[in-house]
Image 1 (cartoon, rainbow, N blue to C red):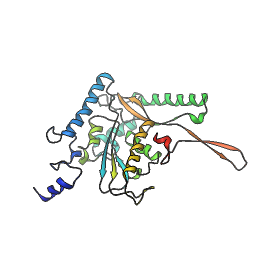
Image 2: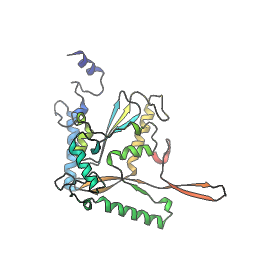
Image 3: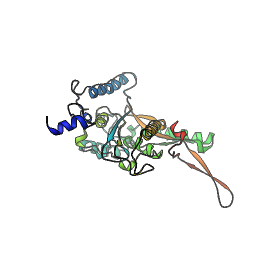
Length: 289
């Protein structure tokens, strides 16, 4: 056994006892050599198969792979944008969807595509569903105080969770450190396999630093167990602000943010009320409950 294999065997946290990087085995894992990955992938396949029989093939809708990163600082995420893919077919397909007026990447411009639908913009079901949501929002605002009606925001799935964590001001999370590129040498990773082969809309690799933070309230410090648990609470709570629309036989996430009000006294003594979207601060129990 070579020296570098010995060091990997005893000191590396990303390989198994055969020095195989387990996050590069998701495309074709061996049941004998990579049993944990093999069976985890089979769970995804089973969920997709059985939901296809019962619920139209909509599950699973989220897959989060939690990692540690030995070099980069802060907590950040990797996800898959077709516009930033190394494959020309991904980029051209995304461009056609945008040009044809689709609101989501789940709609395929071709009837033969995995997402269903056709090349006309009318095939994108999200446009009508968003109109219904906006109409419902207007009705809620007319019946009640308009400051309490929710706001609906449609973002590309690859950016949905990072933006929610940034809005929540998760103290160890850095949106600037996130990457949405699909690289050729990452095709065998969990997030790319979940995105490409299982069409999971919310699929991410969340990386936690082993080198400390350089931004936010924890800058210059290493993360403790308490801070990791805090980040886990923010991550779990973010899903409470999600709802799902349907297009092309798939779930498409939409962010639902209730409105809050702030009252300020103007110079003339009159009170003015401003409607804002909620930005939770670290330690806010309302967000973490």
